Length: 382
Image (cartoon, rainbow, N blue to C red; front, top):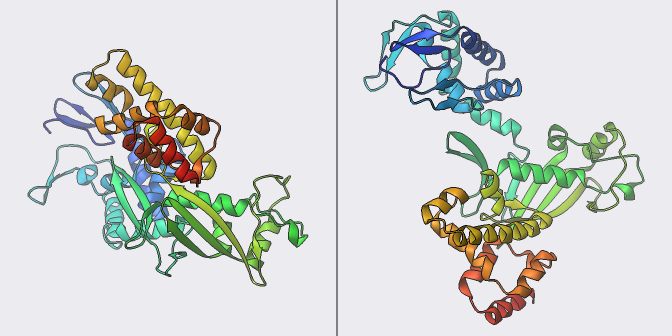
């Protein structure tokens, strides 16, 4: 072997793969856990929950690499790598040769794993099944025309992200929307039923049992979500949870029918949230409170950008320091030149029509004159 990244379970010495005793145990654990769980993503989740991480190694230049969370792809590559039974795969020639390295996994275990993965079309079927089981709104989310949202995914920097998607519609992140729906259900006010019930402790599995249908209606950045719950199933779930002290504020009043309980809530989509720049995630589903906070964070981010310019940093330096490209940096910088009246309104949480950060950036970019900005601001309020 000429060099490169050594696979988990081996170290590279004199251009040869040498077994690493500690990592050998970890490799066998991955193979056996997959056979037990029968699912690649579930295996990755279990490994992460136990505190295990991917291989750590040091490059020839002294840089440290690895030590990341296990992902679907990383587990899949480990399970399908013949290096662990003493062979080397030549991907270009689509051939497998006998290697010089020692085996780490018994051949019968390796073959059992390949057979199990093969029966699931290289793991895709089992992955989709796993996601459908995890997603709260799988097969239950529709648009206002009755078209169902389907589950889809994309990979960014080696990590998979799942979305609800409907044709000619929008991609809504599964994790974010499921969290919003669960929070909405947990905030249901059941006091009108005069029963010793409490929805504040409901979990995902319990919510799935009582959720019949969800309808998402999008108008601009506003999304209205209507949840229909099976009344009897919902009340049974609530009775099973220990009573908690009910929050007096922020409770959602439901529409209680004979067989269903209907909830209505609103969320907003803002793909330019400053949260995205702070923690590397696209937090584009926001509640009213989060939307207002994103404007305040946006202003703070803008003033940070202005300080970088004033300190004499070069464009390359502030791009690296801010994590933004020139276009995004300029859009934030424009917020420093908003009318003082608009800034005061934002800091006091007077947000017209629940304006998103993207809309605020468009306003700042399109109108440099304070009076023009205020006129636009006032027209939006109306």
